[in-house]
Figure 1 (tube, rainbow, N blue to C red):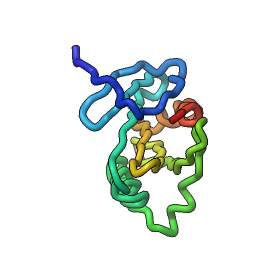
Figure 2: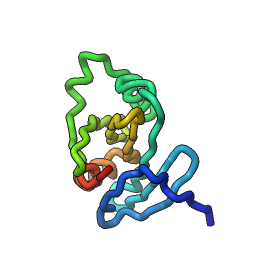
Figure 3: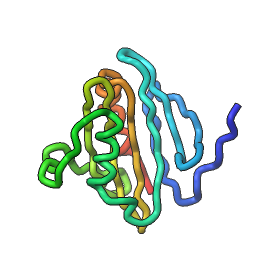
Length: 143
């Protein structure tokens, strides 16, 4: 069994949706979950990086590459992003990136010089199945 590291003292709290199985922390990932059901398995991760962490568009385009999507332009960004608020009031940017077979739904949330990443990735149908749970998960995050 892998040893999971305790979350950092400044990590937020959240409510884990029904059906999400905690998988612990690993390098660069503060928490991870697995959601299995119709359409396959979704991996949900929480991580953070210091500083600007590369900015919104470069991160989104890295994820586009992971699901086989064309890169997004600054102008195209407004079509795929929306703001989402967590329970302690911080606002993040939610994006849904559907490739041909894989999809990533992610939230990028800058806070106090850190950038938090909440990411759900897996087969397109499975990520779409979990999208409401992912959204409600983000809305329970409390710093």
